[in-house]
Image (cartoon, rainbow, N blue to C red; front, side, top):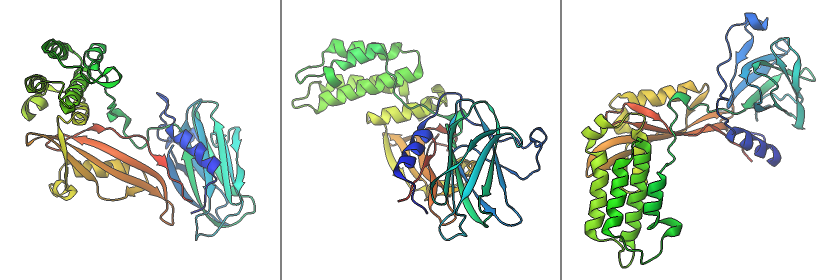
Length: 368
């Protein structure tokens, strides 16, 4: 694979990380009537790559995608290593098949053309790919823009802890920048924190408060000498256990949308343990986990698993509360070099019902 100049690589990283609310692109319309074109337009989307071949009988390739006003995009094209080379690819971006030209390419280096612009309007865009010297050969093209792809946005999880101001103040006396060695926990400190924990009405706030409280107690317990008594520490743990319950209670009382959050943030405070589980032991069951992983990969056209998924089981006192399945899916060039990588982060119930996705969007992979 060819080397991308450092300055261009920086542009790609900036674009791929940009994901303003409501700016996700949608699938390119298969309807050709409104574009006055033949079915030669290939559907495309942000954070995706395609491979095209130009020849004497196919002098132009057409790629279509839906763009939104203000989207900052970057398209690049090159001939893969070991393929017939097109030395001067030309990219022309139009609004619709026969609309006004919105962007034309320049060569970043010989054989490597790019288009970079901010889309002026929400519309269907068509990219024309040709060769300036009418050469025959292969091209790989990437489209980078603000998108959650391939993460299913309707199941996207925000796993950022959101503790209440009250718990931040109460537990903060024994944690973080407010903490000082010798700040012993009093019985009043413990009861005030537990009262706040039970008063929380929002589940994610409550789980965040539980995390902060457990971490404060852990810090005090590990001090030399300990700044919290065993009895006080036990009262805090019992208070958290009361809102979580056993797996049956947890599944009955905590909504599906909140379970991944609880599992994630409370594991950070060592309330849950997350031990490794062999993927084969899950996939052999023919459960929703295997189907869901395959569906997520298939939803990102042209991608494939980099390696078998890794699995972590969330447990407490030997009881199973859920699973976390992580894997890497890549879109690759014709020579096998990765173009985009997606580091998926999926959460499942004990019965392997899918709960949601905690991953970020795909990222561009560069090769030196």
